[in-house]
Length: 353
Image (tube, rainbow, N blue to C red):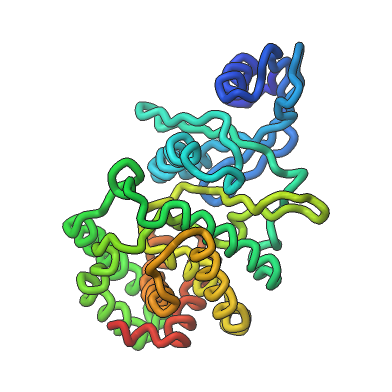
């Protein structure tokens, strides 16, 4: 029995087949599926499914997370679904265990652009650090950065990067991206009018003019890894009090091969106001570097991390413009703009131009 309104992938036969293929169900079968909870995120729809079985089902999951496209963004952001399905089905099996939720099934249909993921439900064992937009406590931030560094270290300068894991963007690719960005920026600036100061307009113009030189860091293909691309603290699940488990990272629709500090800058400079960022930034960068070294990364100095972090903060002035261009709500991109500009000034990032 399946709740009406659920997609075909959530019917009992399909779930039984998926769980058997994933090695999570032996002789038993899914007998009943019901919706325990559902919600929309900015770009996806999340449904928590409760399962009941017939026959032998010891160890089989009692609930699952079904992730599907948000109806309003299904077509314009179809590539995000394609990208995330590829991550869970192709990359996660090659990763250290317990860094992400387990994926039981995933598929992207190139004709209809429909996609889905069936993921481990960690609702009872894990939780988000805070209610958005509150920043994390020091302990929560340390745990999150530990997981991020462990994940980055697993793919640091991996031989497969850009070959069997992700792709390298060529100079022509990045030049085309910057041309598109410049076009978006012109319309963005026109719409904001005097709400975008002349000082910030000058910064954007200088940044666009210097982008080829700035991109040399990426095109060096040195000290790069798989990056999350949306590594705010609400994309990490922390173990609940009394649960002995690891932090899990989720939402991989923007993963890429890139400079690792992009994730750190996005987490701190993009989302934290100066007082909180200044209180934790140095501590977390030190801890991140120590964790990289502990997981086998070599030849990447603490000074190189600082330089990369400032480079990444500067690059993140592009993020609010991209968000605006795909109609992300102003409550997100406007506050991101303000925070990242304060970080650029605080860290002297304009010197990189």
